[in-house]
Amino acid sequence: MVTKRRHIKIWVTEEDKQQIAANAAVCGMSMSAYAKSLALGYKPVCLNNLNELDKVYKLNADLGRLGGLLKMLLTNDDRLHGMSVGRGMAIATIEDTLFNLRSCQEELRIMIEAVVDNIVNHKE
Image (cartoon, rainbow, N blue to C red; front, side, top):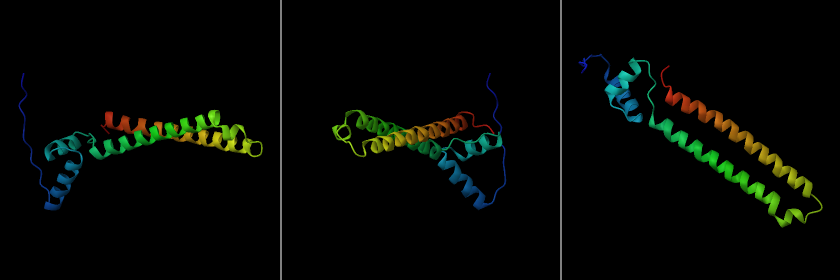
């Protein structure tokens, strides 16, 4: 069964119309789809949010690669194994850095989950 679609009108100023058009464009939506989404209580999924999320994913991957390189340095670098003075301090510094990287990754994971949850369940 086909539902009959209805048309509604709203009155806005020229400035409001331009702002709505700009906001809809940022979200990759038509003005109609954008206004309908907002009127029904949904938060439109904007392309900017998805682009920012992609950047956060890449940052998280970079942190993982950096952590892997630091671990490899700890286990395979002859310069560290040959050190007598300061070796413990260097290893402790690297281990602290690894711990900080893990903490940053956990914070990023929490932020990513919140953004994804906001996108998936975008009704306020």
